[in-house]
Structure formats: structure tokens, C-alpha cells
Length: 80
Image 1 (cartoon, rainbow, N blue to C red):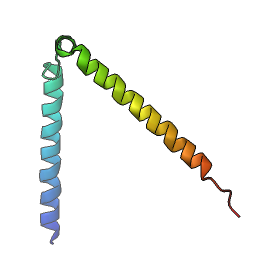
Image 2 (cartoon, rainbow, N blue to C red):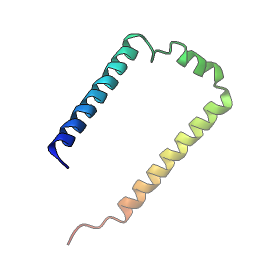
Image 3 (cartoon, helix red, strand yellow):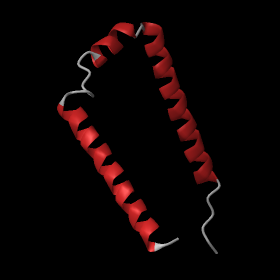
Image 4 (tube, rainbow, N blue to C red):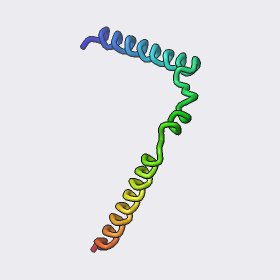
């Protein structure tokens, strides 16, 4: 590749990156990413069954982790 093409590619990529950054800054300033009702809607749509399932999954993960740690400790051998 010639120098002219590399310089052109760097210039175009810098321009596109700056354009994306300006778009992001504009979106944050105008509140495009703000969702005031996100947490309220999440609470309204949760029910007791979903919460029980989440607790059961957390307990299963904890039991599996404890079981794995016990097996690792049991099979541990110091280096020779």
C-alpha cells in the first residue's frame, strides 16, 4: 500500500470516530439513555414465582461452588 492510501484511511477513520463520539455525547446530554421508569416497571412485572426461582438458582450456584471447593481441597497435593 502506498503512503497516500494509509494517510487517507487514518484520516477517514479518525473522522468517523470523532463523529461517533460527538453522537454519543449528544445522546447523553439530551437524555436519550435515561429511563426513569425502568426500575418501577421491573418491580411491577416481577411475581413471587420469579423471585423464588431466582433464590433457588442462587442457592444451587452456592452449593455447586462449595462442592467444587471441597473437591479441589481433597485432591490437592503439594509439589515435589
